[in-house]
Image 1 (cartoon, one colour):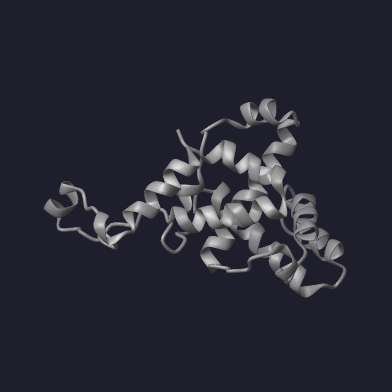
Image 2 (image 1 turned 90 degrees about the vertical axis):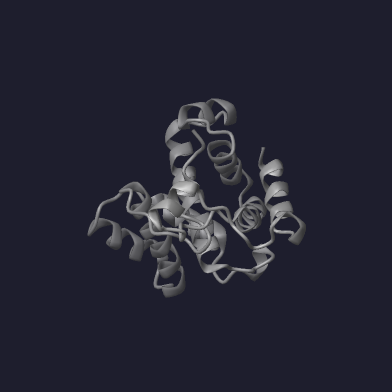
Length: 184
């Protein structure tokens, strides 16, 4: 399914198939609101997911199963053979990473070029994600051992995760944050 969506997105970006034009529903034109939110940038999402796959294949698999297959956390846990709590944490982390990468339009091609080691970021995120403030901040500072760049990176992911959890996700350039909700 993922490959079909990505191939369609590539085809739709060609001049022959409309290039940068976008469809506007007739109802929007009648309302006078031709400026709707842009559709998800599946190419950016695919690139971010490929990088996540290189960084952490198990988290990428959870994201693929939730987003492209529309499985519930329980179903993903059964497929992957890991507990539901772990799958839930991996989903929170994977979703936050993808939103951060598509929002920032990072073009880092290999894990070696990352300023913060992905494993450190992941372990600290998973260690503090379920705590409430101010305990979360205290635990985060303890876990980062004075590494300000690592702390900032994890805080960014936590902020994205919190926004998604409360339904107040902000739009990502060329992709609405709700587009990282699983398929129905």
